[in-house]
Length: 404
Ligand SMILES: Cc1cc2nc3c(=O)[nH]c(=O)nc-3n(C[C@H](O)[C@H](O)[C@H](O)COP(=O)(O)OP(=O)(O)OC[C@H]3O[C@@H](n4cnc5c(N)ncnc54)[C@H](O)[C@@H]3O)c2cc1C
Image 1 (tube, protein in one colour):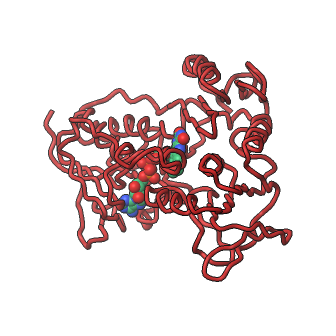
Image 2 (cartoon, protein in one colour; image 1 turned 120 degrees about the horizontal axis):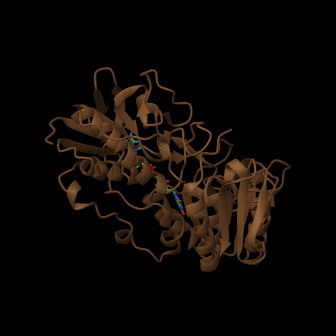
């Protein structure tokens, strides 16, 4: 099959790279142009809150090695897509140029949500890019730094753990919820995680909202809703993320939380536009069909495989057997000396959480059930616990869809 024409991939990170590679694997031989606003070739983000912050992973170790089949992909880095006209099949770039396309892949991912509280900005950090991680590391390694992490989710807890590992004197995590990671993992693991973090030196101010920041030129403290001030030289805001979709506005799309796709990852009913990675809000045929975004490392690859096949089939006219997209979500999180390893969708089974093996103070394997069936498993602990979770992967893959 020989194809002519151009596919533009908007977003030059993991999702963009995987989409380009999978388009080649799906038989697309036309031009592929990836437009990415970061200056770097795609790199791996998970180490940013762990090894890069800890200083144990140099940048070179993060760069993905593109597959040989994608060697002829054109990379336009340091360039943003500012708008798209889907009806005309063009995107406009921030260098003033316009790129016509035959196919478009939306892979623009997320950016950190920022707190809109009064106070100075200097000294307040987020962790999404390599530059973010390098800046934060410089500040964490200043002698005597006191750190307040706002947000007890995955990234907040990872950053707190890394800071403690670096020998930071005081690390306090603030969150309005009563336990760390309670939203995605529930109370049982939330309590277990709180205990482990506290035992390793992290302090918590839970059930507390941030009202503002103290300081003149840079932050010196975090003001909580009840007036308490936590002294801080460095603040890390890890309060969720916002989808990079503004460039798609004006095309009648549902951009309310990422970009809505159908079960083939097509956007706005247009077979020539697909979305991949964190930014895609897709129905998962494995579950209840409710479209959701999934910010796990496995998703750029899973979505890219499916979306590339759908797009290549449309553009080349060669039929592909496209079952509805039904990935098994997978994530891990390394904190201190322990790991969380998850398979499936624990969040769909938060009303029925059971210990499957071990005990919360040691290695533990937790099952999340919906209507009596397993929706997901999470292991907390060392290698043994993670192996235990992997045993359930096959069961989760095999079982029929969990419908509402
Ligand atoms: C600090 C951190 C730690 C993580 N740790 C884990 C972990 O331990 N386990 C796990 O499972 N997952 C983890 N993740 C999640 C995982 O890294 C993401 O799911 C993955 O990076 C998503 O890739 P993506 O390509 O969809 O989006 P992104 O990586 O966000 O890439 C989108 C790219 O598009 C660019 N872009 C945005 N707008 C435009 C535009 N208009 N024009 C051009 N380019 C644009 C962005 O700058 C970026 O380069 C972590 C994420 C972060 C940030």
